[in-house]
Image (tube, rainbow, N blue to C red; front, side, top):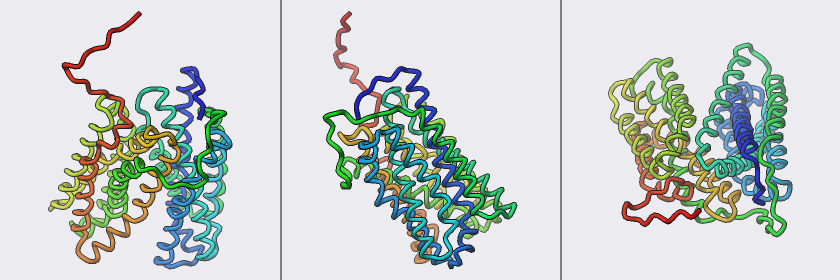
Length: 401
């Protein structure tokens, strides 16, 4: 994209605009998740068939995300994000309309494809704004996604409590979110390709740098997916707690992640991406140790809280590093997004299968081991680091007037 000079107030305004876009994206996810039981009943599918259908969003996202770079190059970053985000918000309507398994799978494939492409576009713009501000904002942007997801979930919970038809609920939510997203996109950076810039390939494998960065994201998202879907079950089955206390553990984990992401940018600006992720990996590891060794629910809940705190900023920093790791930021971000989406897809089922073969405690031993990879391989995020550590004996360049 061409290096258009934007006034400081335009960049600051673009930051708030892209934050609103992240919140809209999260709100769609929250709105959908709360109505899955209604969608299952309407489509008349069993639990196993629903599990099959819920694999299609990740499949659609993985196949479509590499296309986002070419769309941004052709239409410009702002127009591409506006169009892709509108497709994603409107795709919320499709799953609730599906009358059977086949149509549900197709609807969720489109839902996932539009989610993935808009995800890449908004993260690429987020990295660009971060570069121009010269300070970390990616953690906060992902925190806004979590805030949007909470708002969408709350609205969906209210709609479900009132017994409303999900088709009506999702149609209204899609209309509101489309309008909000359209307005927000008017203020994001309007990046256009340079005249001599070669268009990216229509579909290409991610660069090697993105694979290394994505590996850290894989570990973090695996721990997130396992904790989000299995923390309540862990407390109920392993520690014999009440359903209410088990649910409170999951809520606490989610809130810890959201708060840590919103507050994480200050930590990153002060200590840098590499040191922040190394420390985060240690915190997540400590949380995992508490979980697998817990003999009391309070200890396990503290472990899940530390797990959320430890993995919260990892994925945002992976996207930031990917956006600065090579000549094609969109392709690198798409590669990292594909890996993390895949991790989120396989984590819950992998934990379940291992738990069935051994125990749920052993499953979280695997999660704890994976957190070691976060701390051990944090150095690959150096592309996203702004904190420059200089040797005490290094020569200081002379300032010239």
